[in-house]
Image 1: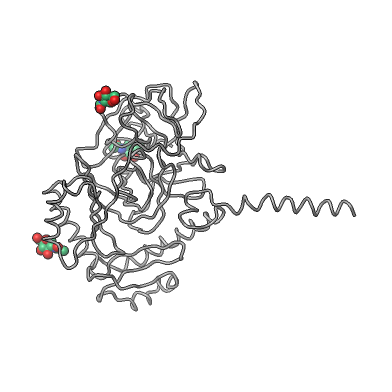
Image 2 (image 1 turned 135 degrees about the vertical axis):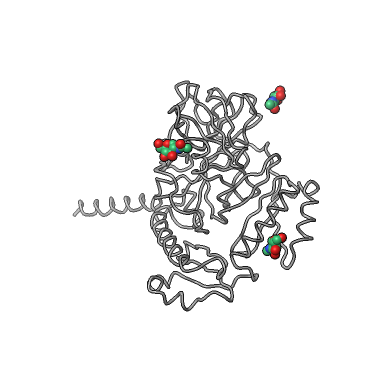
Length: 407
Ligand SMILES: *[C@@H]1O[C@H](CO)[C@@H](O)[C@H](O)[C@H]1NC(C)=O
Ligand SMILES: *[C@@H]1O[C@H](CO)[C@@H](O)[C@H](O)[C@H]1NC(C)=O
Ligand SMILES: *[C@@H]1O[C@H](CO)[C@@H](O)[C@H](O)[C@H]1NC(C)=O
């Protein structure tokens, strides 16, 4: 009898101990979706099904008869934005759409633009932007707003006034949507809980920091790649961190000092409007193919298992990044094409993501999860305006850089 009581008490203690572990929200993706960590894998599977459904329906639509779609994973739903020309009933009755009907919602788009009109408007607006060369401005299509968004910083208003005035003169009924961020404060020193320093060969994770000796610029490590011609291993980051002929040092999360040389940066980006930089590995550092997620007690290092193979036109799906300042955060894919004008050059952006970010995160890896511990790489963070993150596509980096992803 005593043994049974003992067992019951033991069982009770075990359940009590297990409960807070199961019922936790420590992963950035769980916070994004407002679920517990142990629900992440199911939701990722659900998102994959929604991506397939999005793909099936889009095969029957062209840009003239609808205004885009947006996946809402937590609602298990895809919203198709429709116009008068959208044959909703005919689509719902198609043999391959019938089984997925419960996943689809059709909603009238806010303005009268179909996707073709939106792309036309986007092209005209970017043409105008190239004439004026505004600073720290991103332009992209937002299908839920059924309009073009011009994102910039309040603090750049005088600089960009002529451009904004020209936009307001030429694009009316409706005007494009202007979104403003506050200028980033680079002197903040958040998240700096010290990490023990070792004199051994330093393991570098994707998302860790890198900087020049004086720390005039801090960026984040993107990923490990190999040069096709020489088979040399290199680190990919943003070319916007380039200070010309400077040596770059390793700056792990939580550290304010720099000791370990990585190497020199070779900036390839500018010519094709594709932002990336390549850093040689010369110092006593050990690059890895894992992403830093030290804030998570269970998955502190996330594995890269490949690069994103799907088309990036499934809006609304999750997308995450890891970086020196805001660490691993997740958001929603908002647009799959943008032009970003920084202070010097314009860049082509393949992922516009609603995500917390900071200029010190620039260069860090952008990815989506295959399961809670494994991800596919989609690119690197190139810049951000407020909580809008802008990323360069991995394939464009590999092709332009003559690189292969090292796995
Ligand atoms: C874009 O520009 C072309 C040529 O200037 C014009 O015909 C067209 O109406 C414009 N489209 C939009 C949506 O502004
Ligand atoms: C970096 O900062 C140091 C010290 O603040 C300064 O002397 C140097 O000129 C700066 N270098 C660059 C490239 O901005
Ligand atoms: C680099 O090598 C990889 C694999 O060996 C290949 O798939 C890729 O096309 C090559 N890229 C370039 C730019 O040569």
